[in-house]
Image (cartoon, rainbow, N blue to C red):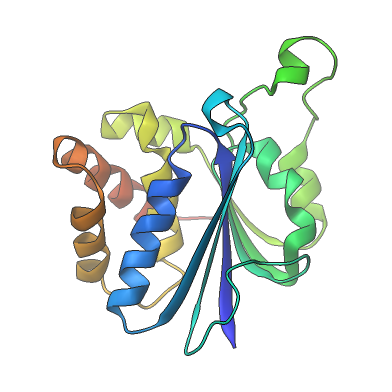
Length: 192
């Protein structure tokens, strides 16, 4: 039996750092961990998805449709794009930030309205976070990833100390303080 987490966003939002941090933490807890990354033109703002699976024994790194226990989304549209991969009792943590994909930028499509409400209406447990504002408060707009990791940390029993150890091991020293602050802001959120 494994726990399956999908971390999704667009290129440059730090989903790979988030998955590395999570993998480090889980390995240090003695769990079997598989991490798999899929990039869709990530260097040009395309979507990026990372699968993190962990448990006593994990055989495959990929999460299939209807198999994900958690969806961590750094951007609203990406949350909507991956909903079909969720189990019925999955938890969704989403930053309400909207980044226009190329079809919207070029006028070929419109950004969908009320995506978070539509996901919530499907019965998923959803935490909507203003990740961008909290990242700015921490000192860098690129720290949305650590804000969401902080929110995710509330769903597991790993100690604060273990999370901090993983952050220190994975985050570059020059931005460590900002990222620790972003994590704390996400961890300390009270959700409706």
